[in-house]
Length: 176
Image (cartoon, rainbow, N blue to C red; front, side, top):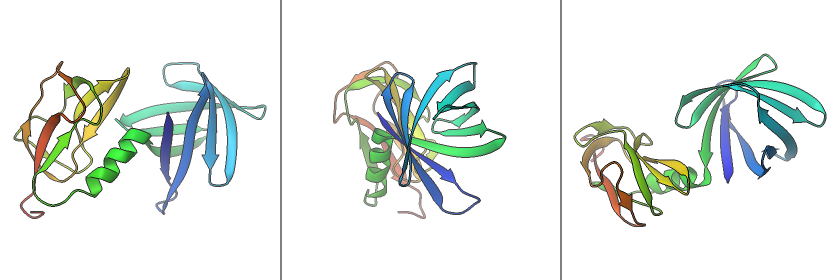
């Protein structure tokens, strides 16, 4: 699986970092035109030992949400947002959505692991409404728009097929 990591650089534009696992514990990291190969092993609950071209680093990782991390490496703190290929695709689909109520459907078969925001509650664009487990991975399904979760058409533990309606979000009054 490929990941896209975005780091805010001094409050400026985001810096994109590609991360791809080549084999267990070995990663290819791309920063613009530069590509690095990094060996990584978890050495503690939130601590990782990294080796890149013979240099060893220790990274302390603090998860700050479903797709965000604070990483301390060599005395420097980095605020990172992480999106796997599927999340990135879902975000792009959400941005392209038209006005009016938005129906969100399952992109692949899976099992509903968690409903984070019940029907009748407000939701922000990009905020996770529910989690679907597929291929041993938990995929947070975000709201495509700011609004109100009008209905949830699944329940926790339910198996869903590709194309099954998961939930409907009605736009906020000012967005309608």
